[in-house]
Length: 203
Image 1: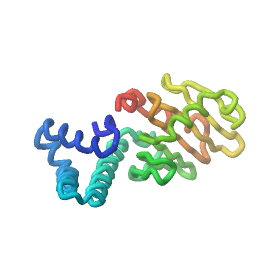
Image 2: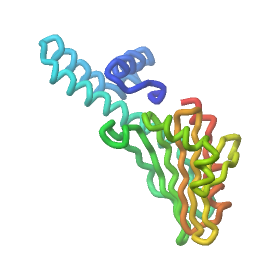
Image 3: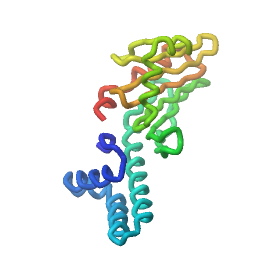
């Protein structure tokens, strides 16, 4: 899957090789990426280095978009009695919050709402992990360390406001965030339990 690769220029070339070896169906999905890389190589061979870099940057963005689409598959279906908006995904450049790829979906029931986000390929992940695994920081933020489906989670829930957030780090590289408002802690936790962390960890 695309998520297994880093997204530099060399990686884009590797993805195209993998797609070509995987057969016509997958290769067809990367036609635009392959064409853009070919264009970059033409510029490179002509000594047009700025144009080559621009084409490779564009190809990298196309790969990130595909990776975001893959992430959407891991967002849970609405629980019983809930509806859900269409899942969305986006790649963020390194100029914004260090970069990364994320997918999210919003779920609704009467006046309640839940947003599930999955974020990966972010250079900020290491810092987030350090904060989440520091009991002192977790406690100072009003959070609690809990286990959800075998995953260490930081749970912040306000009984009076009926809103909260659950954050989990999966396989040391994927951040899953569940945010809810006007709902019980059980409802918030139910969405955290509806996610297949084993599959996310295999990305």
